[in-house]
Every structure is written in C-alpha cells, then in structure tokens.
Image (tube, rainbow over all chains, first blue to last red; front, side):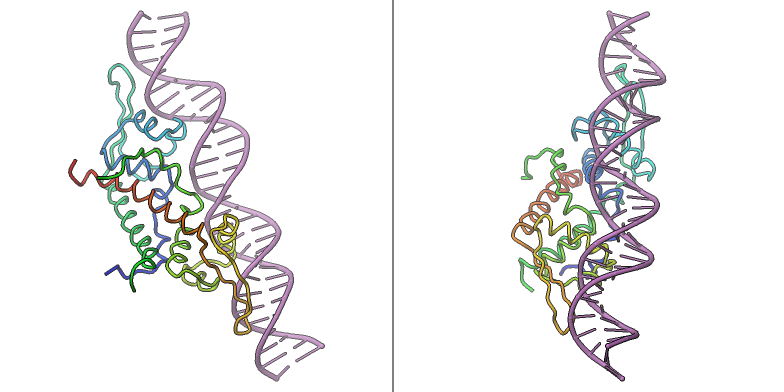
Amino acid sequence: MAAEMKLSQYQSLNPVIHEKTRLAIMTYLISVGETAFTELKTELRLTDGNLNLHMKVFEKHRFVKVSKAFIDRRPRTTYAITDKGRRAFEEYVSLLERILSLGRRSRLQE
Amino acid sequence: MAAEMKLSQYQSLNPVIHEKTRLAIMTYLISVGETAFTELKTELRLTDGNLNLHMKVFEKHRFVKVSKAFIDRRPRTTYAITDKGRRAFEEYVSLLERILSLGRRSRLQE
DNA sequence: ACAGAGAGCTTTGTGATACAAAGTTGCCGT
DNA sequence: ACGGCAACTTTGTATCACAAAGCTCTCTGT
C-alpha cells in the first residue's frame, strides 16, 4: 500500500521549506493565501528583522510575491504564495509524509 | 474537528529531531527498533564521520542506547531507540502533523 | 610477527545560517 | 518640528552540518 521508496530520499527535502520558522510561515501562507508582514510577525511571534530575512529567502526562490502599499495611511507589505511556492510546499509535504509513514510501520502489521 | 492550536507552537518542534538527516535516522530507527552503524551508513548514504556526530547528538539526549561488540570478528556498533527517544519522536510527529494540517484547510471546507 | 582491511572515532576546516538587537528610512498625523 | 509605526539593514554571535583526512583497534592471511 505504502509507496516504494528509499529512505535516503530524505536528502531531497527542500531545505528552504524545512527550516522550522519558514515551515510555519509557508503553512500559514498556504492556509490564508495572502498575508501582511505585521500579521505574520504577531501570529508567529517573530522579530521583524528575522521575519524580513526569512521572507527574503522566499522571495529569492520566488515562493512568494511581495507587494508594498500604503493602506490606512500606513505602509503595508503583503505576501502572496506563488504557484511555484505552492508546488514546492506540496512536494515537501508529500515527501515528508512518505518518510514518516515508514516510521509508522512498526506499530502496524507487516 | 482539528485541534485548537496556535501556529506559533511550531517553536516547540524538537530541533534534535527536526534536522533532516536525524529525522531520517530516527524514522529508520523507529521502524526497525535497532540497527547497526554500517547499516545506517549505507542505508542513508552518509559519511561515517557525519553519521558518528549525529549519533552522538542522539546519545547526548538519550534518544538512543549504544552497544559495541565484536561480531563475526568485526567491530559492530548497535543503536537501539530508547523510550525517551520514541516519546520525543512521537511528540515531534504529532506536533508536525497538527501544524501541517493547518496548511490543508485551504483545500477543504470551513 | 607483519601487513592489510574493515569499523568506527576524532580532528580540522569551511560554509551556511538563524537570531537578536540596534540603528535607519519613509510616510504619516498633530 | 516631532513622534510613531512599518519595514528594512547592519552587526555580531552562536550554532551546526558536512567533508576529508588521519587514527585506533581488532581480526585475518601469510
């Protein structure tokens, strides 16, 4: 039933996404589609400098699209997930789940 | 249906387990219960120095129990998962799954 | 007894990177 | 002009993964 796979494929887990903080950011971004810098910052309890660097990594890989505007007389930076980002996330999760499923066999038959 | 949780809990993902290589090692160890240094090395395609360091991290945290012996006239180092290791792994996977499930809401109702 | 081989450990160096803290910029309202 | 907020930049630190090379130990073959 489970996929035939070599555990050594774990090497392909995308490190851009695997990093804890960015994994949370991606998850949030996937679930809401689009979000603001401030929202991410408070939701994930990050310092602004740190969040900024993580988002730059995503930008560099074109996993998110950034737009800046003044809304309600305040600057607002908005991030939207791109198709590439969504695909990378889904691939990551899919591989991760296949890996973890190997760790569950012990509790089941076979 | 899904658990009530704050995404900011991602901070609790155990970094000892979250690291890619160690996640694969733990998964393998959980599925077979006990394994040898050489087996891990070839199965996961790691250099011996690198594998050794990762296993030391597990030892330090008492996630694995090490035993050394000569078998078939060759040195053999064997690793077995401990209860603490198993609990930590299960906690990690459980938290990870709760996090990832938030990223799936977008494709479902609600 | 000596050489060689395999398992595993140690050391060294390197490069990447997460993070905090503090300083900076730009536009706003008063 | 001043203060404030959003966001960005800079600086410094600490961590860490990994490869490569060298070493130790025990066994085997001769």
